[in-house]
Image (tube, rainbow, N blue to C red; front, side, top):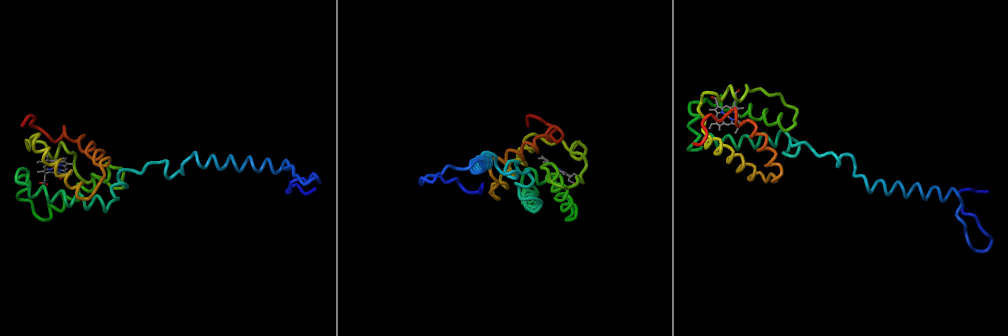
Length: 168
Ligand code: HEM
């Protein structure tokens, strides 16, 4: 008997063989499983680093953001007297910091925020100006709201190390 064919009853009707029934059940179970479980790549959310466009995306965001800081009438004076090379170093340090903090493969090359900002007497209002420039830049690059919030939450963790004058 050929088990891959239904069994003929000889009366024009076919009774599926045990093999057919078994195959049908396995195929149906497989299809249901594939529909129920999303592909592995989709199931795991991409890192914030990837969702921001990887290193190139972050680099473009930091360049735009730094240009806003250097020319801002409130916080710009904080950066007076920096050479082009120092400004480039500032941008690079921020790129590496954001890259690393969002799950990217970069090394942090800056010193701790408390060390580099300690003694500058940075006011809460100045921190807000800087944070708002970051929001403007993220909007300019059409970064979705979810990624805004995640990045700002990360930057927010540095606030206690940066702000020395609250309420001003
Ligand atoms: C919002 C979060 C901030 C982040 C992530 C950040 C990040 C950085 C980084 C990575 C550096 C370079 C540190 C190093 O040289 O090792 C730096 C330096 C500096 N930051 Fe910030 N900063 C923030 C807020 C601020 C604010 C609010 C101000 C003042 C308005 C400020 C003013 C400065 C100044 C003046 C320097 C030193 C520049 C130099 O002479 O090299 N930062 N910051």
